[in-house]
Image (tube, rainbow, N blue to C red; front, side, top):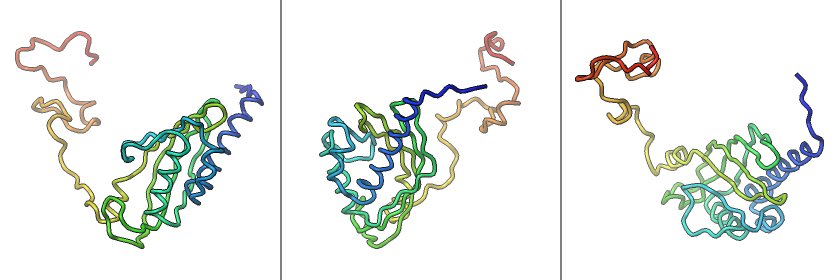
Length: 195
């Protein structure tokens, strides 16, 4: 199988990856928010449910977010474990990050504590600039490291996770080989269920 790669599209992909690397190094790690105007679309936004409400879109909003992060975390470093372009308008990465907590994150008083976490990010580009950033990161890990909460314990899932049919194995691997169970009042297994 031969792949025909359009050199122009490949240049766009490589340029987008370079833009993400530049954004992460200059803005996120070093806190140089003056580069937001150069790297971000005028309508840029971070999409992350853990962000405080009311952050404005655009480079100013992202700069405000970065300043909040830099205030609570110093020596912020990001290691890109994977980064690749998807088409000509998206870049995806998997990362590991580390920082020194300066105090105050979710109410923690553990200043000077080194914390690390992992995550994934999807960047969308518009007009050659970063337009949207969908961030998925391990916030729970940071909260545990900072003593804000404890690590969850392994428990049996609540009853709504698995249909409460007596005799139904919990684990998916066990369900594959389990006999089909006919519910009370049901005469037979419906025809559309493969056996």
